[in-house]
Image 1: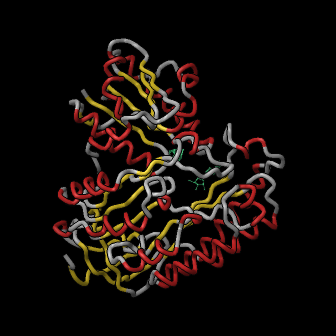
Image 2: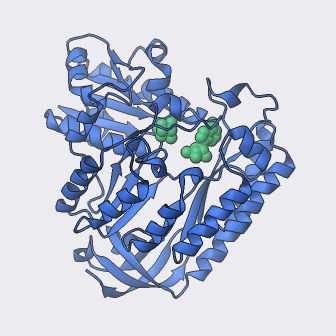
Image 3: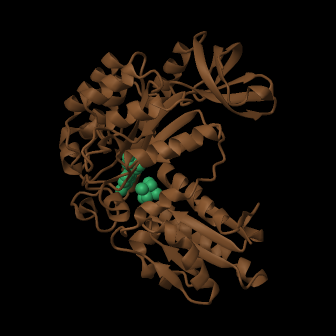
Length: 436
Ligand code: 5AD
Ligand code: SF4
């Protein structure tokens, strides 16, 4: 029996898919090269904006053809859209045989059995079940041998008024420290050198179990063989001075942080219920720069939140100019059903969002070109992740992509390189030294 998983959305969803692969392989499934040869197709869905919702329906339309050739084939939907839509999704798309929540991925083997017996196997739970932690007992099946995601936190307790996540992923639940450390040790034994801790709001890890997030950083970095630690996504409000200090102090923690600002106008930040002002956000950036030498930043921005004026939008651009992010993920505001912003007065027309977005991208392009130049001729540490067309590819500690000519035996090694040609999204380098 073969499976095929199509994943949409964030890194959390990708990590969930890696875990689902682990579950499926534990019950004898093998990966299919394409959906056409699969006996089970799973769509792991996202619903953060309207576009990913639509993509799921068009994929389901395509995958339906599988059943003509292979009537016993099963099609399943999980992840955030499944959670949000529940039964309604099956009514819209009767081709779906099984569906489960982001809460009960570990029940997949039973659901497959039910579906094979000819029932619609639908288990969308309102709340995480008691045995949710069983999920951690399945290993992940990963594509990247050397860098691994580790989910340490589920759900989110913030109430950003545009965001559907608290509804699809539930309240904040920290994964126990020992469970995280056990997985990290197993990953290292499997050849992993970089650990990327994940959570919708990872900086809040530990709040519900009486531990500070920096404790997790120290403990993960301590595991012998962990060379690099990253984490995503931090909420500015939970980013404390102790976390910044720990980032600067722990050599394994990479000097990079993704810190979503969302907007630069205090009025819009209040409407979003982000819990910080632009000034407070900029103070956090300064604090990070103080404690973490050479830190680089990336961010998320929403353009065209209800009532956003040109002036508000200018405030967002001003934050971009001030911070000089290496990467800005910008999104047109997309109204999500059952969120407070959905019914706010003053929705911004799409043309306005589009033109603001173009302005933002233009500004960021210029900033990035300058940042790229500043890396020219510098020396960088790279963890070699893959090889493509005779070149080795990896990321620097600051999370920039670098490539250089080199032999495959360097895969998985840390190397020192010099940047020969620095482009906005990639740096062509030459190898100086193999670090180990
Ligand atoms: N519309 C547009 N962008 C959104 N995001 C979250 N919800 C919405 C929405 N309704 C963006 C935020 C978040 C990122 C993952 O997606 O910027 O940080
Ligand atoms: Fe999409 Fe958010 Fe769910 Fe991630 S948590 S898959 S971004 S809706």
